[in-house]
Amino acid sequence: MKSTILFPVSVFFLVLLSGAALLRAENPTAVHIQRTMKALEESTAEHPAHLRVMFYGQSITAQAWTREVERFFQEKYPTAVFEFRNAAIGGFESPNLVRSAECDLYPWYPDLLFFHVYGPIDKYEEIVKKTRERTSAEIILWTSHLNGSQDPKKMLLQRDQRSKDILEVAQRNHCMVIDLNKKWCRMLVDNGWEPNRLLSDGIHLNEDGCHIYANMIWEEIVRVPGTEGEPEISGTITEYPADAPCIVKEENGDLTFSFDGNRVVAVSNGMGEGEVTFLLDGEPFADDINLWASTRPSTGPCWMPCINYVGFEKTPVAEDWVLTATEGSSQDGTYLEYKVAGSVTGEDGAGNSKEDFISESGRAVIKSSDIGVTWQFPYFKQELPEDFRITWSTVPMFTDPYLAGPEGERTVIVQNCANGPHKLTVRSESGNTGIAKWIVNAPAKNPDLQ
Image 1 (cartoon, rainbow, N blue to C red):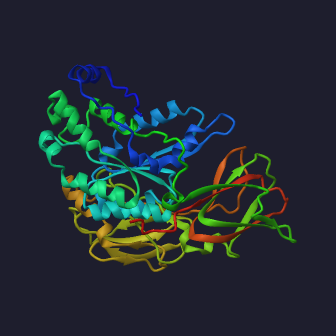
Image 2 (image 1 turned 135 degrees about the vertical axis):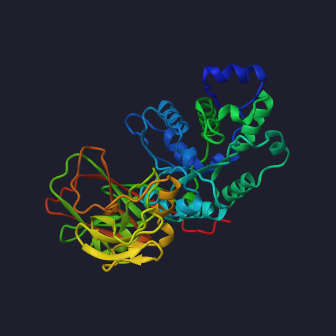
Image 3 (image 1 turned 180 degrees about the vertical axis):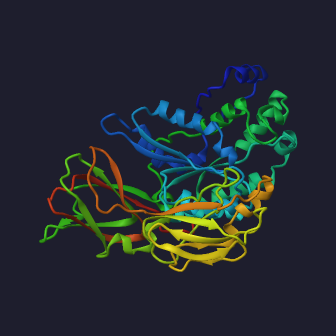
């Protein structure tokens, strides 16, 4: 089974004349994204598929080819409702990204993840494994294109270690994998092109390179007839109507929704009356530390976050945080002394960039190894400004109270609870929740996929 590639005119004729065959037989690993593809193929205007798609990685994953892939999805599946997010961070190799994923990737909880990053393969695989453990996302990986100094002929004869590693990670974790490196090499050889022809600076793609990259990805994203998805690998996404047997009305008027998973989404019927409140296994959402997340910290002398990730060891509250550099910091920015404060917590202690920090409340935890701004200032030849600040927020991964919005609106009610059986108490004074159906996400419960 083959797909049509839409090359820009400047590249198309060169490829056509050279006889390069960029189309390839259907990728057998496409079976690992068939829950997504089945939903898209069956989408209608009356019953549209709803898909959250994330691109995550470094600067290559931040480039314009991803927007072309988004357009391909929208044009091929016009009735589907897409939420796209590109959270890639240029320059962040896997040891940094494995930390920033804590605020970028898992809290956003995609249905489909496009992932590519350079750096140590163990940290690369750690992100893949955590995505499996903490979400029900289907995952697409791919091998890297060539930089300007690599020889495509030699790489066709002997695969580079990076490509082999990615293919092995995909196999171990049952991800779809696109061997873009092999296709890229073949294209360059068949056309007699130098590797730099499709690059802007030795590694990043130019406009033609982005077009080809997007098509090499897109041509392999296909429906495999007869497949349903792989719940034992990617977990499940299950819909429950408001009158499902697992939703029981108690004598006091409360509803008890028994579910198995780690995320619950409510879909509005557009006719709710008043607020709806919840308990999870008899306890308020806000008391569970697992139901909170931190946002990505602010940037400093460049586009990268100043701190990879700010965690917490005590249950937080919804608030904004600020880290302020203090007098003992070095002018060149290589050393920070700082104080932190929360908009609710208030002043919460002081630390420095050479030591791990736990705030007095326990609501802010910073590892010294996560403070990247201390190398960013000298690298970008900037001095530390007076009263330099880094900001972030702690936010709930739950909604309480809930007020039903327009028909079809989706609201995350609770996310990141332990992946297993729970009882959700649903309390509505009016008796009309305005909820048409519930959607439950459950990651696979077999983390050892090998």
